[in-house]
Length: 258
Image 1 (spheres, one colour):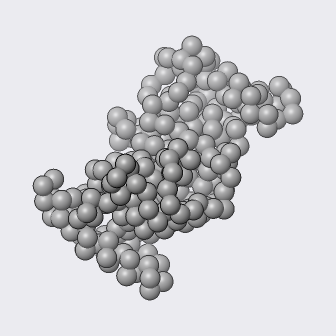
Image 2 (cartoon, rainbow, N blue to C red):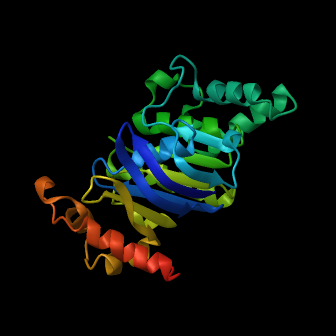
């Protein structure tokens, strides 16, 4: 999926500018950034919830599965039935029997075998997110957009959830894009995009590349220091967003791969 958003306005304010990204099959991409940099606006553009100037190509809107921060689930269902009905209503399968089989397959894949007969209301936050992810997987969505799905989860649960999603991304050759504020899992992803606000308060890209190259690019030994550098002075940062936007653009125009 190729994303080229030249301009995206929010009212009279320029919210995003010069956004050029490629999301590959079989890869997971983490989107992080400073407050108000346009992470959610970018996702809304991709899923067709807002207008922009530019284009997004090499995908079909019906291929996108969106996984929100707060799962939209029928809490009175059990996990297996929730997946069964998602499969049945998707019209992707030839029979109810196959729908049942696929529900069981994704229950196992998401590590929910012990909870398959439990009502969703009794599940933990991490387990509910696993059901939410499975509901998109069983509908055969090729592109998964996950919006802060590990918010509020402890470090171990978050790592397990993200690790499972990345494993499925590679095994089933999907394109997965995840917004998160959690930097502890950053090296698990294939690619990382860092969005920031420039001095004009417009969302721009300060980095897009492999997580292994980020510390060298940002001249630091700590991922947390990256956001400290990029935040404005008013937000107790170092106010270096414009510098790194320019540095990234120079790399991109020179064809250097990060």
